[in-house]
Image (tube, rainbow, N blue to C red):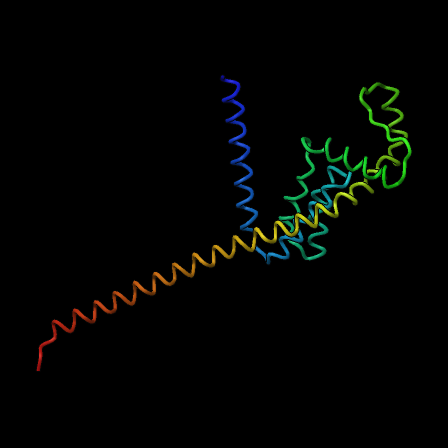
Amino acid sequence: MQHQESKSNQFDRILSWVKKYYERFLKIRGSPHEIAMGFALGLFIGMSPFMGLHMGLAVFLAALLGYNKFAAGIAVWISNPVTAPVLYGMTYYLGATFIGLEKIHFVSNLDQHILLVILKKAPEIIGILTVGGILLGLPVAAVGYFISLKAIQRYRGEIKRKLALEKEKRALKKLKSKFTHKKKHRKRSPKP
């Protein structure tokens, strides 16, 4: 029973964290296009095999291209220690299939010999991961662009509607107080 409550509590914290950063993302300054392009760029770079360089590369390229640096920096976190095994497995498979490798090796048990083979083949593996990252990164970035663009536009539209409604309420209140103020003055002024 206590274990289930602990899992529920963890899920609630993760959900709260995601919601908090989603709201922060929506409030980023810049045009919706610049923000969405930065986000798409970050997603694309996050699919590359260069973990550890993602953040710097994304922020540098976003600055160079005029995209939102903060959005790019957030989006690279699609690749993190939790998601990396799945993402890199997918990018390796896509890259190897695209290149036409006849035999794709998946390692189930690491020993010293296999680690040496992997190190010797590191350039080939990085090449395969890069090709797979491009193949997976392009559609992920495209989808990420449109989803983030629509989310930002919807959020900003809601804010504009709320501000317009508030402005209208203030104008009505001001008009009402002006009208009641004139009415009071008419009653007090003596008739000639």
